[in-house]
Length: 554
Ligand code: DLZ
Image (tube, rainbow, N blue to C red; front, side, top):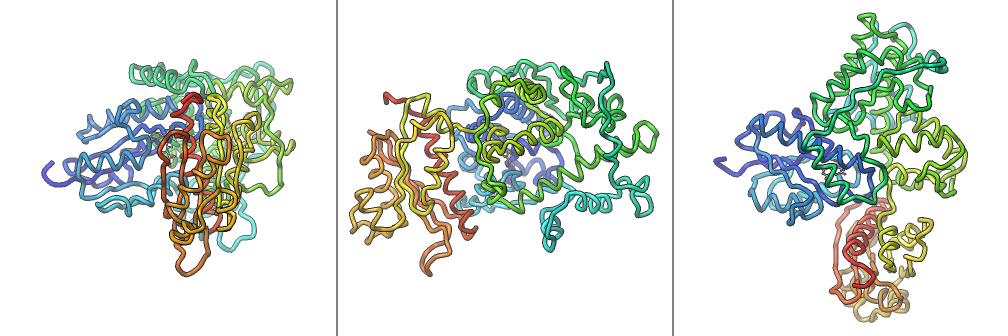
């Protein structure tokens, strides 16, 4: 490589050779960076199969890129110098390669996008964040569509996408005269209905190694690795798609709402993991589905239903997510507050449909849309289960408190701008209450001094939102509690005074017998909710690192 290259980080759900950051790039001027990082694998306690699938697909993709002549710098989870986060790893790669620029495709998750938006300020080289153009509807288009509507009906959005792509259109009208054929898609299963087995892929050496890694490092995560058979390469994903179009699409529509005990997937395509990782192109799949109909191999109701899942629901949920984040994370329009029943972890319930869906999720790391929405989702809606708890089950969270419980650690919080939100989050988790020792809400300067014993002069000299006050808050929280670990938050959630930097937040972590740690974040004017939510995430991240590194004895 003659001159300073461009560094192209590729995340685990960007495994596409035509990714915007690779398109048009010269191989001898590019270093691709792929990173297995602890933060991603543990920010929620992902299902074991999900971690194994992503790491295996990443390793296979790296090998495929190298075979094609790309230079790939791949950091494994077990690398002793692994920094544990995307930002930390990009920083290390910048030291190794001295690139003239970093080109990154925007993240699929708000949390990760927040961190990459900090890169231009953090790194000395140019950073270019490119739109992810693997979707039919760019986010700006979704925003325009949503702008003047009272209600955002998926069905109307879907019609726009049909018009835009021309899929199943006939001279400007929907093929067959209707936009939606769901009324034909609710057939009960006939006695003895048997779907063909979808292809399961025997783990090769790479996958086997990753499975062992996951068993070793993530032994206490939910789910089983016994049935791992997901496609981990583009070739395998295409084979899975071929089998769906040859054997199952015909019955997919009619039996879409059916469930048969012992046949977890029935006629569902099971292609979403490959689409979401980037191994399959969603539009190509829709075109193949349409072709099956045009060739007389699949009925219109099946094909329309399949296409609606992809250019309708998938695109709509993405647009809705970005439109409403970060508020969506804590939204609870029906004020549903009931805790998630214990049987969601064990599958032990007499309600057979629920037991089947939970067992299937544990064994396969997957629930198709009928299991997910019609059974699990409907149960949670009717029972008034807190949406946050349901989301956490899907993502399998609870990391901080569970680890603190296991290690018999006690936590304390000292909060200013988050006004007790962190304490509230830590008391949301049933069965772990004893790990949370106490919370101080010290919003005013006087409260910081009275409750946490901070000297008034320190607040006057440094300002309430400062490194020194954050450190003093965390140390005060530790001194005035029985906790082993205390975290503090003080910041400007905005809108504030002229001199206040909106979105600036200082954090500190105090651990008995250790030097306290300070962190500082500049979130910018992302709104009061946005700053507070981002602050919660950082504080939880600090706590998680602390509880994972400590046992109660230390
Ligand atoms: C889900 C996941 C996991 C478990 N681990 C990694 C990882 O170590 N490295 C990586 O590049 N991607 C991982 N992913 C997928 C990311 O979470 C996903 O790319 C981001 O959430 C997108 O914003």
